Length: 111
Image 1 (cartoon, rainbow, N blue to C red):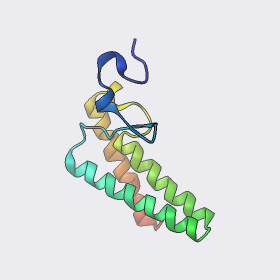
Image 2 (cartoon, one colour):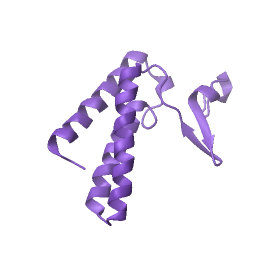
Image 3 (tube, rainbow, N blue to C red):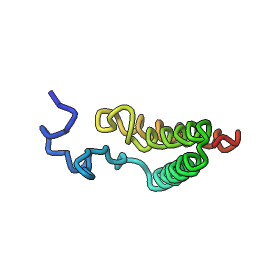
Image 4 (cartoon, helix red, strand yellow):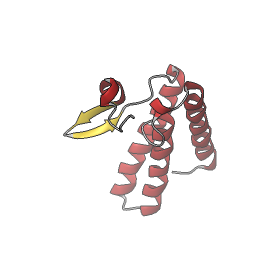
């Protein structure tokens, strides 16, 4: 039986990194470079939009920006189902779906 840490199979370094004592899930290493780069770009845009919206004290904009961050992080495998528990094809399809959702946000002018 595997636990959430991955310690049983020695995969901790591949699955997690620690910053300031807090453990964070790594990006799925199976994602193609172009897909990872596109999702990472959306993640950066979302994080920037969160900062700007907080500075303007705009709760609706903060919510929209956090939605972008969440979709990007799910696509990258940093949130949602643990990527190491799923077949690679499913993980890549989830990332592509996230990118489609982010493109729809761009088209709608959200955040």
